[in-house]
Amino acid sequence: MSIRKLFALGAMALLTTGASFAQAQQVSHIQIEHPWARATAPGQTTGAGYMGIKNAGTADDTLLSVESGVADMTELHQTVSDGSMTKMEAAKKLPIPKGQTIQISPGGYHIMFMHIKAPFKQGDKISATLTFEKAGKVAVEFQVEPLTYQPGKSAGDMDMGAGHMNMNMHHQHAK
Image (tube, rainbow, N blue to C red; front, side, top):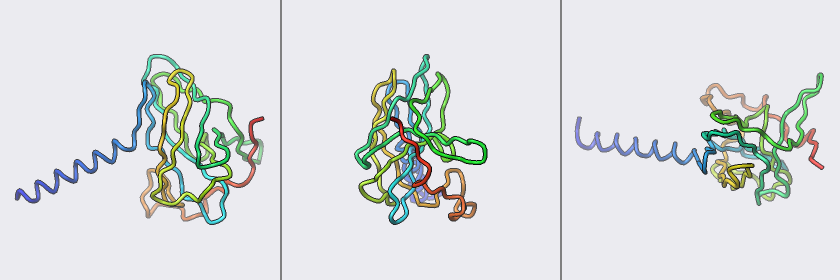
């Protein structure tokens, strides 16, 4: 193998490693894994954020709140099925048991950005602060992915819109 090819492979490995490090953010015993949000459609007033939250500590912790300057209101929400109807409602808190990773993902718990101040555009970053009972405040940057993004699927496997949930409907907010 030539020196040029070896150097190119080494550089690619470093870039790939750097990208994966950029996806994980850790404070104290809480590690945030792959924070992301979908780009918003024209006229859409809400967005959602997703991530994994790993508790590497020796005690349980709890996500208490979320704040962000990109929207008038930011809340932790959960998707709840009530008979034949599925709706989203505010969740007061989310337990993060010690030694476990909780997925905040489409169809479950998620971060709602309501009355967004500007569209979420692919490639942008959205800053937010998560507040935990024990770990305190944890800064997070959500990577804005394409509107059709589905983690873990290749472009050929993606549902090009049929499975996209209209984020403007069925919200109940905490009082």
